[in-house]
Image (cartoon, rainbow, N blue to C red; front, side, top):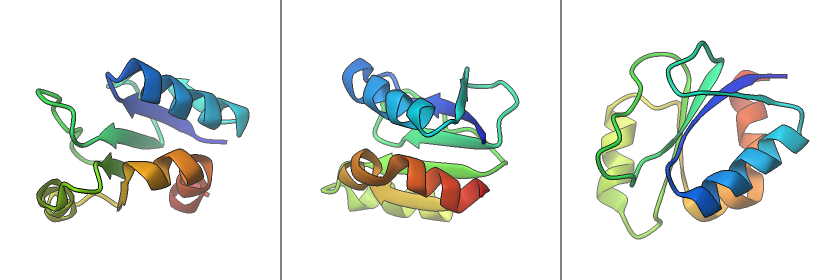
Length: 97
């Protein structure tokens, strides 16, 4: 399975994503550590987006400007938060599988 760095300070949502990824067999590592994929909360204020490598970003569905900025920044996949909630492990597999 994949080594995933989760960039999300929202404890409730972040722990939900982390739990789903662990249950799917992925190893969670700290942001900045060597990872196969970075999963990033794009709406997190003050959070620097990781540069380079494979990146999956999620955003509030009402914030199309952030979605566009992430696409321009070269994220491999940018999805609404609700989709990350429903399909997180499958999205990770799609990018690293």
